[in-house]
Image 1 (spheres, rainbow, N blue to C red):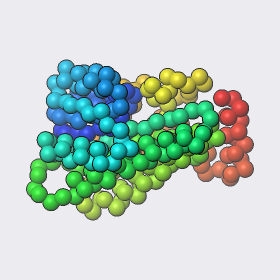
Image 2: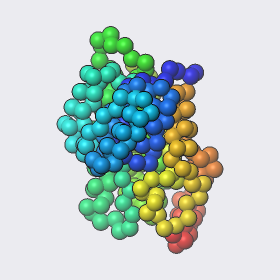
Image 3: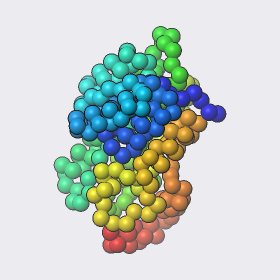
Image 4: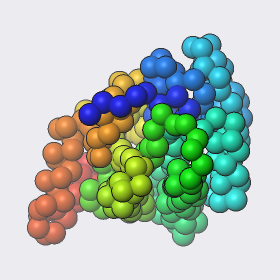
Length: 258
């Protein structure tokens, strides 16, 4: 069932890629107030400016999503200004190359810890009684196609995305009785500062604006798992279903090719 468009939206990791594109797409579809965060003040200001040019009220906060107190305070303050309809836990990192202890911990801190720090206060805000008028109560979480199976090229990244994919799926059923929608997003290769660094061929590559249109349309229809493109979704699903000996051989070939 198609629901009303979200009016007041909060997005983490909004300075590029999917976060930026979704913010702009939401404004084009009638969003009135956006609360955006990122780690780079200059890029954040640019995205806020684009949203304002399109007719929305928008503000940006430079926040480290690993700071749970700061994120919770920002969410609470934003909701006081304009009752939130949609909280989008999108911030994430992908560290390629050698998986040092520091890199692995940093990846988990942001991709898992940052999601926890965003989603938990959002649940608290959405669960409160107070009769405040909201279009809807919705939480979106960005995972990845790599969440279907651990990849030898990025073990830590795969693990973090598998974690939030599973958590999002579980939360969807857990929070449904409270009237809170939860949607998990598993994109393939989408234009971003991360993919711009990739030196290998990226099959079924999408531009960020195309991905944003699909994401927002499926959020409006409350699709639980938003995974695209379908060809990569099928391949990743199949890879996860194969016996370990077969999947390890296939991923080993991919690792050599990369």
